[in-house]
Length: 401
Image 1 (cartoon, helix red, strand yellow):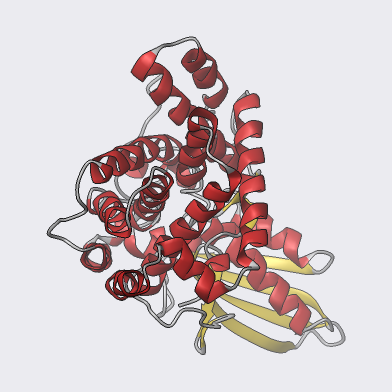
Image 2: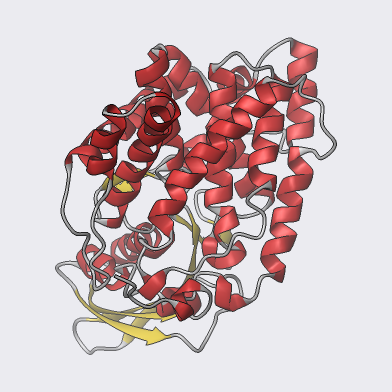
């Protein structure tokens, strides 16, 4: 299992699989062939079907600069290893002949895979299931964040400090920014107004409203192409920072505890990524929002004093109650239903944490089994509901007001 550094990537929205991943692939191909002056990128499957709304073409053109690039859309065709497939061709400057081509896949969270396997595949963790990790925690008398430190080294805290700084800044920008998000939907930002209304409310309305506002702030920044941290993806990047920012402001949690919560959340995301998938194109939104919800629930449970078994329970519950969630972005944009979904998932994560903390941590379905079920469910979901934009809300949507 890889480092949690692969869960938390700093980048620009709106999509880790449709912008960050293809941009990384373009940079790699450009570095491999500096002699080429012309590139051609053929996009297949989900990359072609929702790539324009996700700004895949813009990300590729920026990455190939100052080289020339042509982009071919092949929405009716798929490559064998993943729905987000592309073929990048490099051509020589002298005679225009094909120098090389690369069949590569954007597999979620900005990661890439080709026929040789996942790129930058350097395992850090020997234990790869929650069951094994909980047994380690029990035998060592340690918590999940200590398991992360033991495997990653103490330098992981400097990395997580930077992650937390970027997350906080994204929330602050999103709460301040107003106006209409880019694209033909003409969707107005709501985080700023939600924040103001929450501050002027009381009790449950205030606390829920603040949680909504902080999650919306990040999701809207992502939709606008702003800087975010994948957690574990761009489309689900508002859930974890929304919950953590809320706890930090309302409960006055120390930074050290926030970083430990990020370590545990990263471990949860890592387990899902290793044993299933965080790609909406592969398993639907349950792999993105479901994982983000599990990460946030685990993080909050730890912050509030939960045991490793209570943390596992919160994460399992969050995953279980997002099973079957489809990925059907309207017009291919990471706006409807994605932005609201971040806010709702943040409140669901909060509820799962409270529920787990009120228990002794005992339950019938393990986190590992919930993740396994999510992967099976994802394979069973029709392709129309897996980030293709041809089913669900993407098909039935029309402007209401």
